[in-house]
Image 1 (cartoon, rainbow, N blue to C red):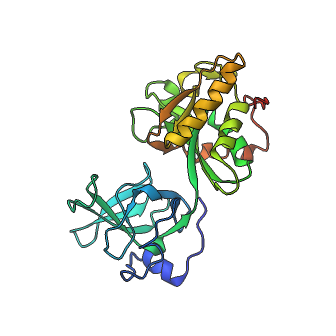
Image 2 (cartoon, one colour):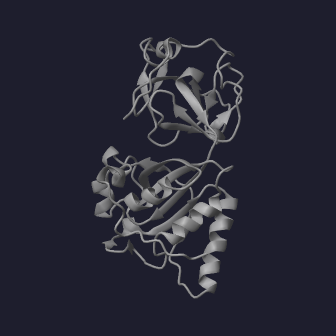
Image 3 (tube, rainbow, N blue to C red):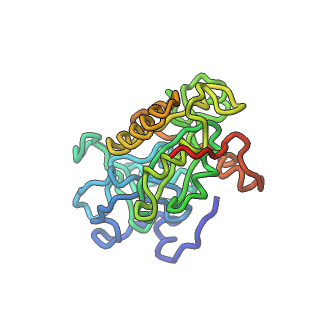
Length: 277
């Protein structure tokens, strides 16, 4: 995990657990579409659709990305501190019972602990996530990706659990992209062109339920695009096995599975490009 060098002001909050003055931070009144990352290690923490106006003077979120934030008892013995699960940098505090939103939770976060990235999100499962991530990483407009697990019944699943086939998860890749430089449709086409969407319960030589072909959509627009592409292929005679499902909690995979082929210096063996559109 890489950590960026912090300014004195950032260190005071992230490392020394300080608090910035209310109504002074960069993001307390910021509501653009995108994702908020940990300022120290760039781990994704919050999506913009979980941010709300609490008028407290600090950025407020009613939910975090699965596994992104840890809770600890604050040294004052009264409040619950929240930290980045990846680097343990201090974020702020979490409160319950204020009834600001239906989730009745407020993550009160320092702007100095986070940074914003204007992006949209997509999640694709097309067999072994090593190969899926390899192709997405090399696509214009993709800002960053994470290999992980989605669609199952167990929180914080491990690679061994998923491979055993008992959790219901599939191997997938979460991709954040700049909509000004690429589109969801282009990424969905790449998904269909870099694996065999007709294969059931496997991909190439990798056989098992964790290798199923699936798209998890964030909204109706993503669903409509993916459905139209499937219909185009079926109209040409392909029997498409890809399943479309609403977005579910995405659990990042272990570090050794991230950008796997970049470290190996080779390309994927089971993801072969086939022109389909």
